[in-house]
Length: 204
View (tube, rainbow, N blue to C red):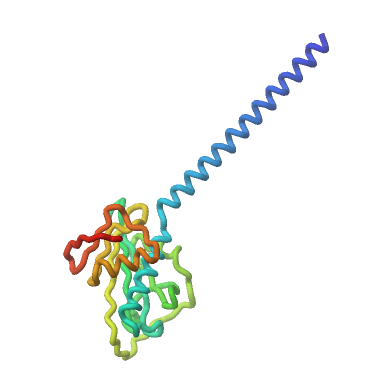
């Protein structure tokens, strides 16, 4: 009788141990699947694509206007929602002296230039995570002549931060060549806008 009770007790313990192992395995598999899902989501929503766009803009302008100086030019960048699935990114070079009355709390650095983020727009928080903060600078109104006139880019992004459109005064092939060089992710419905006219063309 005692032997039977002992054997039964051992069997119950083994069953409980197996159940516990199965439970832990289930928990571990669930955590792994959740981790993979979050990683996949992060890859689909590639905020670093914004950095690659900014890099493309700076390189393009430096190629076009050889005399842009980090002493006199500041990168101004902004991001605002268009709707729940897309945002508009604006990026331009601005003479530092013209920013003397602009309100800003922080100064960032990018590609050797000072960078300011337009704070009051709803997607500015996203930009602040992407650029490196540097020492605060108060730009002063000084009499400096500017011989360059860099134009801004207006970029529409979808909810994966892929580029849906770029608006620029420059040529389609020149702008897209620079974007592709820096591995900027373009949406399947990407299009280019030049001088407010819809342009079509191959992006290879």
